[in-house]
Image (cartoon, rainbow, N blue to C red; front, side, top):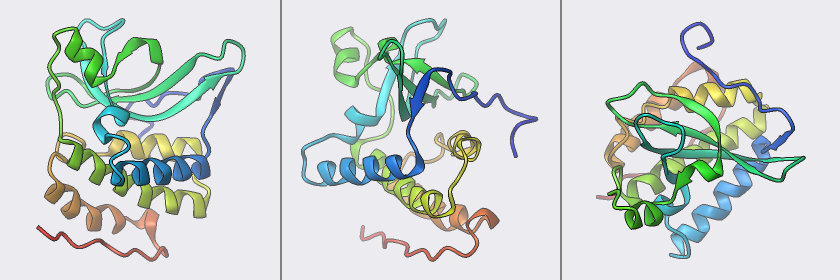
Length: 184
């Protein structure tokens, strides 16, 4: 779909990536922990990439993979800096700061609130319910991550408005969706 226009990262060599089912289970677990105030959505899924960049940037961690040889962790990272080109790539975990670590280095957090990141993760959970049921390929997942309009999904209302647009796409034909109501 996007192969001619965008750089989509290849599956890293010698790493074990998550399957659709593993991503679905991780999101389910993390969302439960967030609902129970045991985990912060921003702390878990927003990272500050500082290494090997002329312009460090905030972004989202979508997947993790473990190198089979070195046990190093790779993060599938998508930046959301309005001033830079958007990119999606596998990056070593050592190239990132959590929001708390960034603050300790005098870098202020830039990005959506915990409530908005939580809503985005709920959207991703719905997508991975479908991805699991229809056995999405690695390439299909990468295209999904790259095509998310993160710069526009900065409020809960924007994410709620985006749901029917996303799930109205032909790729989701035949899957039954129940859209949560916006109770605000």
